[in-house]
Amino acid sequence: MSRVHRILVATDFSNDARTALEGARSIAKGTSAQLEVIYVWQPPHGMPLKTKSHPGGKTLSDLARHEAARRLRHFIYDGGHAGPAPRVEVGVPHEVIVTLAASERFDLIVMGAAGAGGNPSRVGSVTRRVLDSAPCPVLTLRSPAEPALRSRSKRA
Image (cartoon, rainbow, N blue to C red; front, top):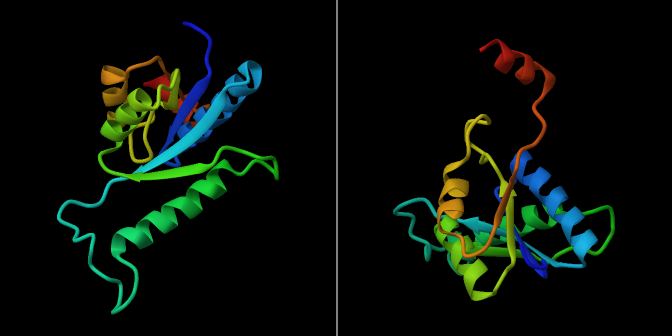
């Protein structure tokens, strides 16, 4: 792999995504790479995005993006140190991640192995789709299993 200049961290706010962010920060620090963190909000199927929350108010899409940006700022906060700017996009997560990585020439995508709602022993569906179609290397990281989970999985 050639030198890493730009790293894209894709998050869903899961524990694995937190581990991925920490890993990406370490890589960026060691290589002086630029780090960007993205959250892709996928509206529920059939949700009318232009519907106003109340007359003259913001659209549901605006409210969802605002809340996602707030959560993302909190997620990437690093004890007062300057960090990457939060980036929120709307769309199908794996498509947005892959398209962004290609169009903005990222050298590496870092993301959690399992998603927020997924089985911790498997690779998440978004991660799998990114792995299958990414234009650059993808590093997936898994958070350490909790002791009770480790002992259960050893017995299985």
